[in-house]
Length: 227
Image (cartoon, rainbow, N blue to C red; front, side, top):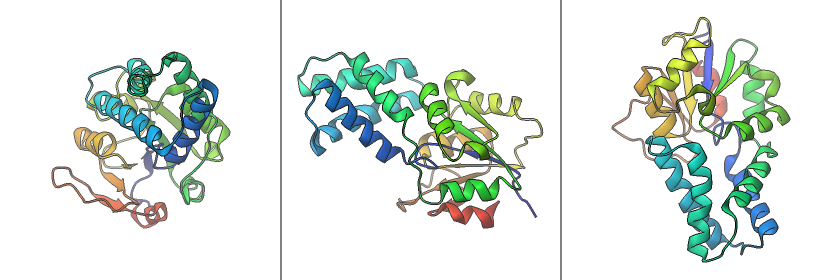
């Protein structure tokens, strides 16, 4: 018996290996714009990037502002004058070319697509996400993609999920499952929208008490027994 015929899947660090793709994109930025590359400078960039994405999740900035501001902050920390827009363009182009997947992502999507409808729900940059999906082996198994830029709202807001529901015939709160790695956007978003959710937690981080988590997995193949 199929418990959840509709699956709402996060993309970055749920299906796609964003961490490796991001590191490769940072390498490209450093190479093309003559910036120092080391573990330390990557941690500096990540600190700026993560701070801006957290602000975005809280609704404090737009995505267009985020992608430029992270490089402005990073370049200021380095004390080096470069064009943040050019750095950002290089970074997004490299990310859009990255089709690295997490373990078992292709297998799980291929298997589940035989009896379920799979959708991507993502806050990522639209051009990056579309380019990456089109190049990836996941493309044949994904029914549609819902990107915050096009929805006019982002996870974790209820407005984002209202948009998703308005565009999927037959979708209901009791026949879908949201699967994602982010507590602040995926799990909180499911809580806000009253949807069942599954936390993908391969690093086995402590489970927060303030959020409802219906299922927790460390391996994507565990979805078989849930859905």
